Length: 414
Ligand SMILES: Cc1cc2nc3c(=O)[nH]c(=O)nc-3n(C[C@H](O)[C@H](O)[C@H](O)COP(=O)(O)O)c2cc1C
Image (cartoon, rainbow, N blue to C red; front, side, top):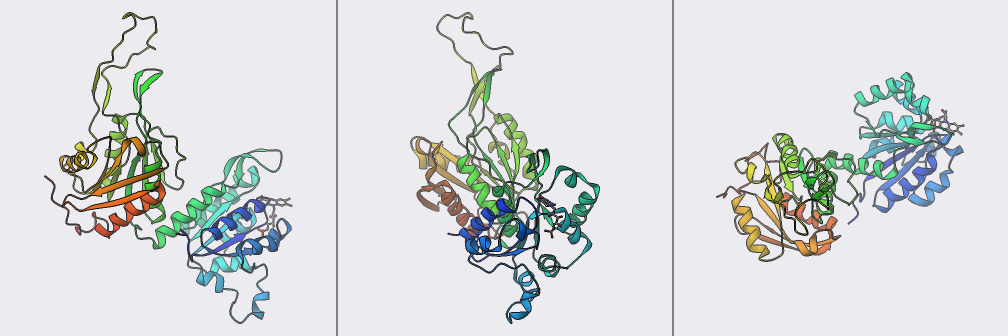
């Protein structure tokens, strides 16, 4: 499936040196199925030719609003009218100033003024131009008018300078585009979803810990799918090796105790909690203040006293204001253990998987169980697709957030 299929995106390109990077953005959005109409300012065409964008988007590139009058089907406001989203990348200080003042003296500013679609700006400029109070005041005005700004990054610039002003990474801009398109029309628009992911590290001493093989990939895939479907996502992650999803709120934790605190802080404003993290069941009873020495007493043998970690889902057993989805990773009797956990912890759904093939892998095969005995098999495939299918099931069961309606019927908790 193409995530941006048929989405009409106007990509405004202005006269900054970072225009060359946006060629890749135009290509990526097109490959994801979006209909990308590139609008370039006159200055932008001095950095990259319209032909480059035209060849990659397979669509005409607009540079002159007066040319429009020759075409019966398209006028100076048509692109803005029909857009699902307007993105300006790079956005120069000059264009930002013109937008703040409400100018419409070229095709791009006219399109922005004429659109009711969301507008996303990715500024890029010299460090001092960025820090200039005029630029910051203009951006504040535009934010106030609900335009979304993907902040520039700090780093080496085209001029021999280092500082804030470099265009945000293309993948960050893409993630913000997906999230914004989800929020305006996606099926999870209006939902607040908390996803936990990764493993936990339970310290033994200042340099050692008990951990597990969780890569975070399953939870991160769930967070990404939820974001693209329009949810506001809080991702609470323990240590993990998979790349973090962008355009979601990330809370980093180390231990089960920290994850417990983060989940309890997030749940009151959540509609759904998905606990995909591989939380340690045991932790060392005491944590040594100093590194335990190899030569310390005890000879060859050394034992570690363990105690149960806090049970996060168990602590939410009586919380019914949030839809609770658990994960069970087992190595045997998977269905039996998973359904037992579903009942004991008063969950609304549980996703069962084989710990031997799920943890640290890029693919997964899962079975989803509901308290009423319904089961859904999801065949082995990349975790992103497994996550998408899990959300198909969730949306089937809860078409609207529980916090607002009591539409679900899964109240068969023991
Ligand atoms: C080599 C060169 C690089 C430039 N890079 C930037 C830039 O990265 N950001 C910016 O705001 N302006 C930059 N400018 C200045 C803009 O091109 C100038 O303000 C222009 O009027 C912008 O027009 P536009 O906003 O209509 O595209 C650059 C100018 C030159 C000559």
